Length: 151
Image 1 (cartoon, rainbow, N blue to C red):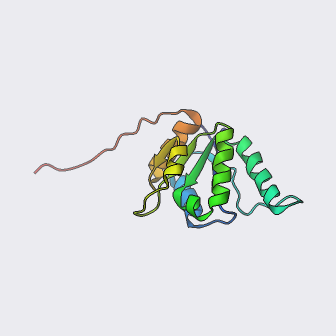
Image 2: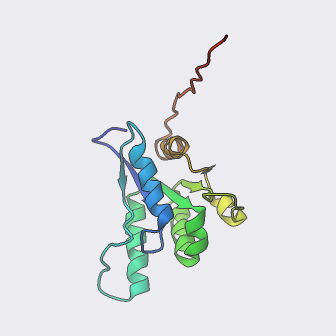
Image 3: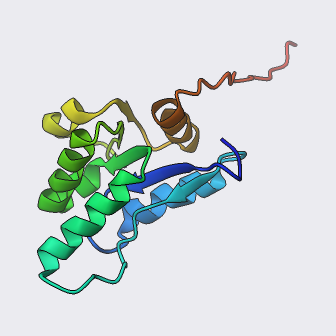
């Protein structure tokens, strides 16, 4: 992964940028040395035709170019039909799905958890690492360093 070859990510949404969608991309932007291209656009102009069919077409076309799908547990609950359609389409294309748990204490739907290639919490580093592993099979070799003084 490099600036010239970013990971192509599709984030599940409900046709507007809600707090989870915005938070996800804030986390991805804050990650150092992580290059991605967002293929999901909740505000994309719809092609001519039936609204539902046009939106499904947009999702399918974007997923064909994606390497990884990210589904936030909150989006799964708020936008049930669109989230399920997106996850089902991603599974049909054999795309890995990274699921992000709720932001705060709440249980996740077991059906969503069953679709996940990997489930992570709201932490920039774990989200980025999961996307790297699932999209490009890149293992990160990060270590936590804890500094302390001995008196």
